[in-house]
Image (cartoon, rainbow, N blue to C red; front, side, top):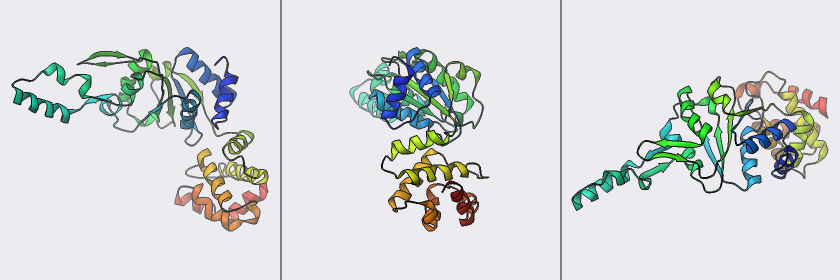
Amino acid sequence: MQDWREVQEAMAGQGYVAGERLAMALHLAERMGRPLLLEGPAGVGKTEVAKALAGMRAARLIRLQCYEGLDAAQAIYEWNYQRQLLAIRAADARGGVDEAALFSETYLLKRPLLEAISQEQAPVLLIDEIDRADEEFEAYLLEVLSDFQITIPELGTISARARPVVILTANGTRDLSDALRRRCLYSYLDFPERETELAILRARMPGLEARLAAQIVGVVQALRREELEKVPGVAEMLDWAAALSGLGVNDLAQSPEAVQATLVCLLKTAADHDAAPPEVMDRLIGRVA
């Protein structure tokens, strides 16, 4: 794509409302062939960026979900030991084992990183919540993110057939290494402003009545300013809107029982439910009604 505006339009076509800064970051990441690190609080739509990007490129989305203890066997590759053992038994019966054949691609299990650089058509590689993985795991990523290649001792270096578009996300669980950050372009995603969030809601639920949409966004944005354990994100806002619409609610002020009942979509801890009793919700709705 020629400029960031085309990226913004294409993302909108996938139902994702991208701001100018994010659209420019996506444009430059693709143009320069660099990974893009998206940082920000949980629930602002970082993972959805990769999904929308894959949709607009008609590309395969390959996702690596990071967690504590993640290692190369789960992320890059491992050998299919069961098949190797069966092959050894079969070879013994024939009188000999070809050790080189045991460590060929026939017995190689490709995990997300190796899978991503093995595609004929460039995929979108999502490395989700990289800050949940151990610091040691970042070292495994550096070769992939720098040269888009992976070294397997038994097979040598495997280079990308088609360089994937790489999106990394982080929620701020821990600081990421300077080495990782240097290899990436960067964009910070925060909770959207009111008009942007309204645009997101209209894009995902175009049939929603305008008054109800404005009330939903107003209440959610007000809740984010309350003292909550888990601030509702964009995904929770969309779930709440779908629930209210499904119940036939057209005005939050006229449907207090439905509002309280559907908070299960919006608030995800017992403490947060206790912090939003009917009188609090009435106060917040009163501000936006």
